[in-house]
Image (cartoon, rainbow, N blue to C red):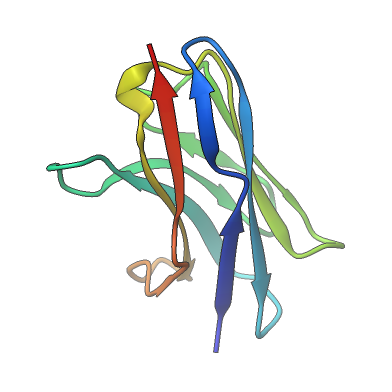
Length: 118
């Protein structure tokens, strides 16, 4: 069973940066795509970024492209999301998720809150 634990959220000002971490355990992650999603108050959860664990290909939503960077450390079994130039509209709970070989993202973390004050 895949276990995902996020950390690194907090309260920051517009223009600041944060790095979110997602510690993954429970199996080896070859064949997985690891993703970050976010859910703002009163809105549906939306995709932010994803990375192919094995080869490192990355994917981004247009709303975060150029500001957020997803990466992974295979030795630490950890996925990161670097958030730069934060805006108030980036305020959300950020979730880490895992997808095995193209299936839906079926494993989710508990989320970490990011609040950006303007």
